[in-house]
Image (spheres, rainbow, N blue to C red):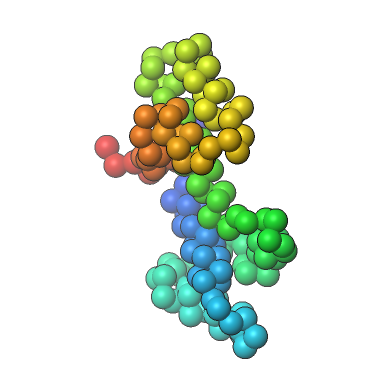
Length: 147
């Protein structure tokens, strides 16, 4: 079952990450007036070295919600970043030896779940974890970590 859970995670990670990188490049443009979206996408895929045989999970027209208003300030990458934070936070519970550790759960409640926008989220994560987020936990979760 564990092998099945991680089946094709490399493929899925590439197809998702390429969308995030193209979204960031799109948000970096200063002039959209003369934008040829198909040409932009083709150039970006070439620049990023997109492997043949893997297609984007979502093409730029699917990014409309990312440009819908100033109220939605997240880019496509935020979905992957949320997975990094989730995996790293759960890593704290695994490291404790008790995934139901009550003291750690209270710390997560205080600094993650109930803090809202009271402080910079980056600082709140540091207060919970004692350091910046690390990608290694997401790589382990996806079966992509090098032992």
